[in-house]
Image 1 (cartoon, helix red, strand yellow):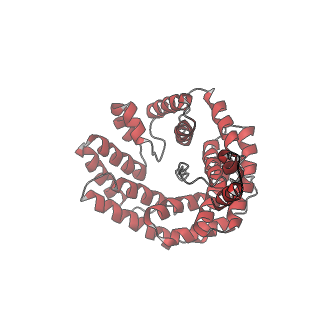
Image 2 (cartoon, rainbow, N blue to C red; image 1 turned 180 degrees about the vertical axis):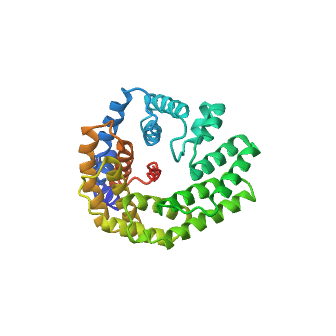
Image 3 (cartoon, rainbow, N blue to C red; image 1 turned 90 degrees about the horizontal axis):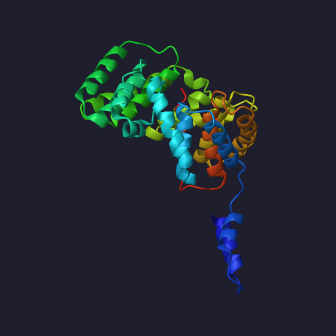
Length: 313
């Protein structure tokens, strides 16, 4: 913004002809090569029929808002209906959209998860849309089933904390407090597990979610440590590459240190090639979301936020 302002002032000095403010504005914004490949990726996927992958659906909703093109909204709704028919695959964020297009089917959809954390979050969202007290009872049963059960993977503590925290925002007291306390308990179990000593991009993105929801600087420190420690050179699978880009961008925002942005940019250039080479491969939707975030960051756009890229667990 300072660059744009400086250009504007310089152009105005002694200028008698009308100014092309759009050209001045665009000249002051750093270029980004990342959004056109995302559009090409999305358009290529549209020709393959309904895609039930959540991150791809979220990308389509974002692109509808960005471009105004109805084809993205239509494809997103088709993907939602396909996902509802298939059953809950894992953590899910698109509840408002699901209940808007298929309320009864979405109630059944919420009951299909077997993982306790995902089930708790789904039940809370269903309660928020239906006010059915049976969903509150289901959450209580799920919490009781967790008592005394340890997590084989320390990242499961973060995953459960994320779901309990999200669920707490959708239910009344006293269940809200029970869920908040459970989330805090899972956070402490994670920090005491030793998992913080080796933080992968996957775990770091879970830390991003917890940091945004709690403000606990221990999570921020782990994100920065993961960004420093990342040793991949772009050879990771698309999902892991997308997570690595997102981690570097989060570290850049947290520290304002340019090296993290440069690292994200370099990985993003590799990501463009990966996205174009095999659009249908697993994890490309996660990579595409990372490229959207990188595009907005490179352009200095803060009025629009990319969809959060932390649902892959």
